[in-house]
Image (cartoon, rainbow, N blue to C red):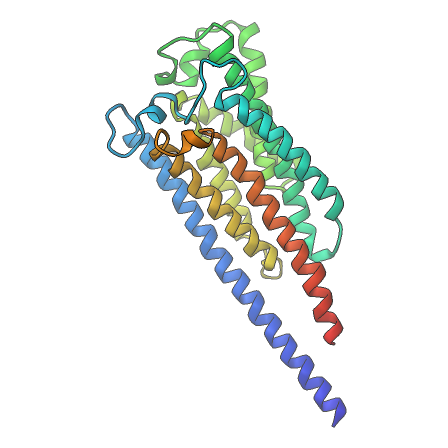
Length: 300
């Protein structure tokens, strides 16, 4: 009888575990789909309706392609603040990662996602500082630049100007795509980054952010939705929630720049949302697998 009771308890626990995994997988898939729709809808709307006098987008955002404050304050524009915040949050996140990594096998995917997203976000921050220097401190900005495509700008540069910019752009994409596709090999990332750079050449600079969002959304969603069923655990659900939060922020920035986002640093709210959401999902997953998981094992 005792053996039968033990077997019955184990079967019950296994059933509950299967049901939980099904919930994590299905809910995570739905949230990933919602996030992708939000970002793609944002991209389509930007490319088709972001123009002066738009009834959808904030006028200041349309002008800059970002919600930017303190343009005339050296080293304190939204782009500068994004760089400072990104470096600080990446260092903080890296400390958390070093403390919690390799805690259990269930965290392997989250460990990789945390590591490569942090590295990619550092590159993202460096790109913001480059933009700040180029727009506000270099003294070499064409007023018509935002309405021009990147390719049109590049045709007016000599090779000594062009090569460093292309190098930064390529490294920028390698870092971001590795964060979105952490399981992909470095060779794959290097190859995939080439068409990403090529596509950006034909996008107006003011819409560059929307283009970046769309490419990363497709890459990240594709890799996540194609995870095997046993990999779609609590960490997958936590990450899906984080991605949904991040996907909402661009809508806030582009529609409420002057009324809301500018009061919180402008584009800074987006840059902060990425490592903050990622870090929260990483810590929540670690707690789930190491604390609750150990408690569940003791009941056996």
